[in-house]
Length: 387
Image (cartoon, rainbow, N blue to C red; front, side, top):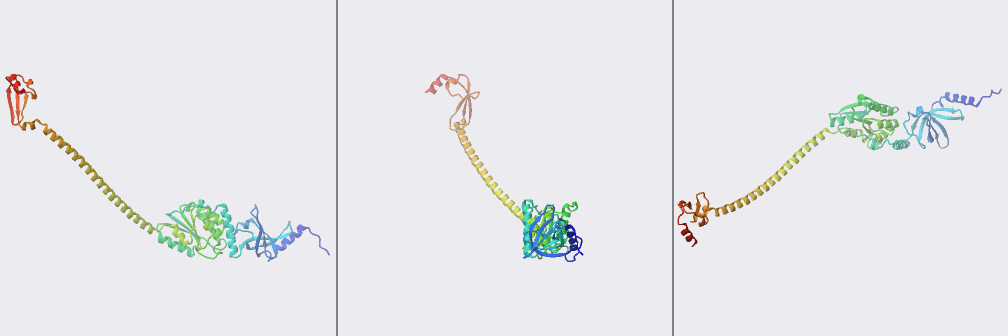
């Protein structure tokens, strides 16, 4: 007896129920290479997963895409966990994706480069956006595992270099599922919470490990959280040869957690040594300056003294010449040579016999005194003088 006919939609609905209840197809894990990758404006992602001979169409719902730890790209080999269901309108079966994991180091490197290129195009690595790390922080935050060796290395370096900075430890999960989200949420809490507003610098990182162990620091959400953090961030992930997306987006990259500690705080001993050196150099410079200025002042004073002495000598010489000239023209000097001088009683010198009046008194001055006399017989004396 033939079964009653069903519609296409009913058949697809039945097939969907069968597939959903199948224990294998309801929780299947498949590996393959991504192709035909498309991001929809709704947030859903569509792609195919292929091997050498076959392909399966995949649907990655937006609600699961938000938890993705990798940047997808064509050619990327992945491991997908999900379930098989029917796309009822097309009548084709589809792999509905729950999680995507990148397979192998080569594919991890490809996923790393895909995300790095994407964030670089968006400007998240732009040096102009990077905040300066304070040279003398008062309070330092450390975001890392509370049980890892990296934390002990950081604390040892900081306490040996600087006992003036306060340290706050923010324990987080640094590897495995949920690690990136845990780190991002912690940084967001520090950045947005006024209670931690006085933290000057934040060290975010962990010690070394495999590429899979370090992968939490290649997460896109964590990268954007570090980029938007209001506190300067030093990224310290793994060893010197390890590079993470966090390194590129952070304000500073340290090769190791130890290097991050040295970068975050100054060495007080070195500062004291430099201050003493600057003090010694300054005092030496000042002493040399004073000595130089003193010598310059002495030379200046000597030049001034010589100039004054020269000028004084000139003045003394001129005065001596004037003195000799005065001595030569001094009437007293003439009198000492045997000459005499006639003056009237008021002291006016009589230089001509015509000035002599008969009966008037005159003074005859010689080198050893004066004679007062009255003029008489002036006419005869005049003739005698004229002779």
